[in-house]
Image (cartoon, rainbow, N blue to C red; front, side, top):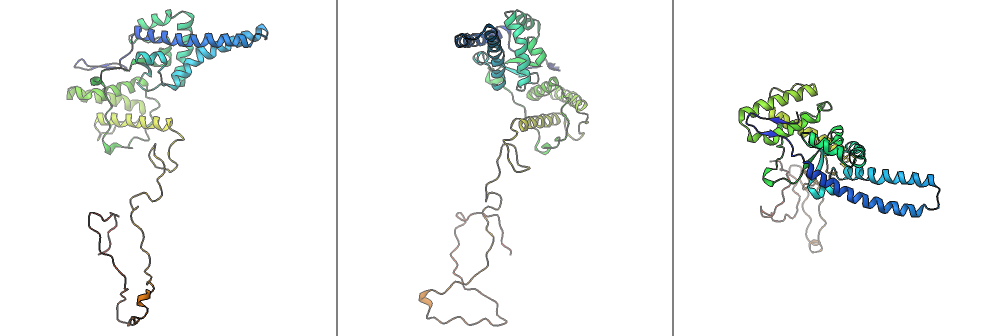
Length: 328
């Protein structure tokens, strides 16, 4: 389900890169990698001239694997699918569902790229890309990745709409491990284009995708939730789980706090401006009042009225809001 065609002829898919742009990006990457490899090999030969032939051969093989195989894998992993050549051509490697690639995807692409690109001078990669409908080489097929165009017109960019607020956190216990990448891609594409579809066609497509998603998760879709809202809520839950995995160990130390926020500072909160009342203590008499008569002792039936100086109330605009309402 990586490609969907609606009743109005609207194709929901990513913008895959074609062979010319991909070949140019690979050529730029090879120029950079080969320049580094030749320079490193020259220095390695000069530094190991005193070693025997077996040691020099072992070091040459290690340099080949490290620079021509390991370096591209590390660059694609750390840059999330953007090597120097792809960055110059406006391309990026993504998963089939449109998400960023991980180390295992870059490892499979790099390992098969040695056979497809280096050993056969790119002949196998070109043939596979021409045969594939989405321009994928064998490394993309086995890794489950796709090279897409990043530089698209601004007017054509889309975003996944968020679900209704009353669905937040409702699907936290849903098992999403069995949902394939193709189905995630179809759901994301539908959510970004559903405003362009006829309402009836949009409702039918949402129902079909919701049914497929419910079959994969093993939990039926709620009857009181519209299919499009159900899809948006599940996609948001998946994004939240990926964010928690990506930022594991960098979040708050307090349980229940949102991801990406640290613990609250002391004094912060709803009652930060309110201080608890303190018991009243009579102030000592000032020097000017030393000669004055002491107040008469309180009688048993009298009400205690402490004599305190009260400052005039501040204007309403300058009075801070504490959130505390005194008793009537």
